[in-house]
Image 1 (cartoon, rainbow over the protein chains, first blue to last red):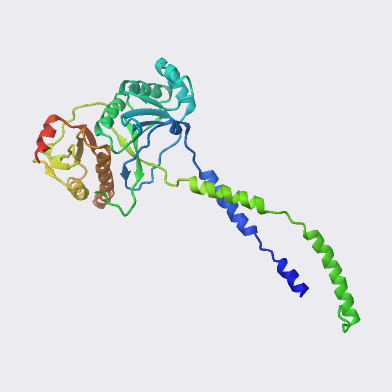
Image 2: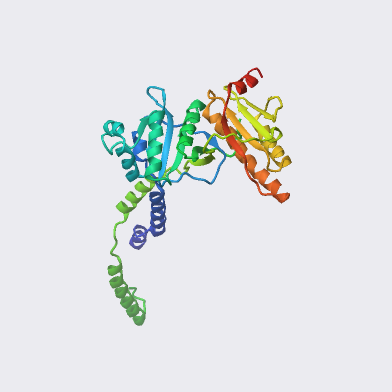
Length: 177
Length: 180
């Protein structure tokens, strides 16, 4: 009898494979995790993106200038917002503009609320600082098309003729309309 | 062990027993993995719950650098217009604009592009008052039509060259579709 009890107490589950898998998954999720950028954490609106058919083209994250058109959640008005992923370029672009330097107090601000003339200036400066910068338009699907039309005119004036519309994937079973 | 055991066997057992005991003592050293596993699972759960695997995708758009007047044949021009309420109208050349659903738009784009063998120019004019989402939906339908067009043209030995433009909506455009 005492022998039997001993055997039961000595039962050990081999945790090694479990721990192996856990760490594997942990590493995977840690490496693929993408945290909110500083610019995103500063914004006061959420963008309901338009949906498009699933595509393989993804938003590049290097040297990207994003022009957001969002509806403020508090006030409810639409506005343009400008941000860039390359921090060094962003500082350069901002440094050349006095009105933003004052408003933003240097480098802490990563996203600027701008109007069309300011946007024109920013796009122009960005093109000077780094001509290869890619542009993305991340607009809310509920806004009036006029906002995008005006923005495209600004892009045209600055010869930034290739840009991207940011969209969300449409679930495959959901056909348009 | 037992009294009835043979001497030799008992000896061997004893010897084996002592040896095993010695080995076991060395092996029995065990690191308590519980806190490690706890933390690992905690982090795993955190990263699994906070991660978003769906990254936004992009739709590339190219606009002509300048507003230049290019003369095109009316018969090779497909005009799509989106009214302020989101309704879609199309006309070929100088035909009268007709309403069209998004579903039919895809087959229309395929049919006309294949019929005119790459020469068709599609112009999209959207009312400034329509929603941006609607414009993207129409662009998406046109993008989806590209695959069958490319396939069908390839069958005829042609390479697909897309001719597409976004143009602002004039007042005349708006009047033409206002009452439809």
